Length: 329
Image (cartoon, rainbow, N blue to C red; front, side, top):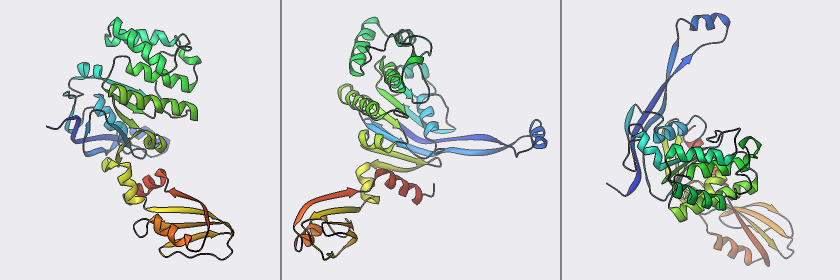
């Protein structure tokens, strides 16, 4: 047994989806005879996560991310396989297990729409059986960290999206969970709200040791928060490792922009491709597997008086798209 908090081993889950072609005749026929297609949502999914990790769980729409999270939350029962989280089997010991996890869905709310935020917090205290002392301590800390003081008395329906998401995150942490599931936590947020949410996630991870599983299509969230990503596609595990390792696999190409004192004649570099040239600026592309930046600069320095250099790496979205393309998803 390892020191991992989460063990997912050989999880499989399939659904029967009703099929019907368009038209009134087919609609009437479907009332009596239905054809179903078996969809394999998860196929032999296995991974382990240690306590204190922030893991990005990513994949295209329909990949099986939500199904995995629902299994891990105890909402769905898999057809086969095992899942142990903090010693619990989520779907078998759900009542005891959910006291140790927090869940935030970006497009769903656990707050009551027509009442002030503080009333929802009080109700959640009763649902989770949180002691008054722990409740007051956690509420005060979360209110301070997420700047909720001015909106606790405001009905949820009157909050902006950014304000509501901060309240959702606070509500999910009232009972001091050890594991936090975040599903699209920054969807629709402005830049300032996104940064605030990201800073908070990093803080609770560092100060409280909360393990975070982040599901999102926003790769900037993954890049800012997660050191490790688990990628799924068509129900199968495609990649499990660090972002840096993934960059090394698909992101070895670089673009370097060089500013220099006026020089009319274009300069060629062995091992690099010149993309553009002006008397004062040039852009080259090169592959790190064939030539290093120092060699590029050295060759340029022989002919140019360099003023400034900027290196651009491949965007994380491009790298993820390449991996999807490799697996044809």
